[in-house]
Image (cartoon, rainbow, N blue to C red):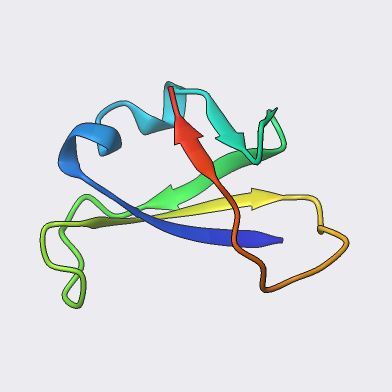
Length: 67
């Protein structure tokens, strides 16, 4: 599955090497790609795509932490 999030410049720095925790589970998702240019809709935010195995239910709200 693919999870798209928008992060600040500070969160974007070194994101490929940082731990991504989704709903309390570390390692369930990894960074697929990210934009180094701010998003044209979400000004001053950067788009990050995470990939992981398919959840039981799609289209739900999840908590994402970047450490």
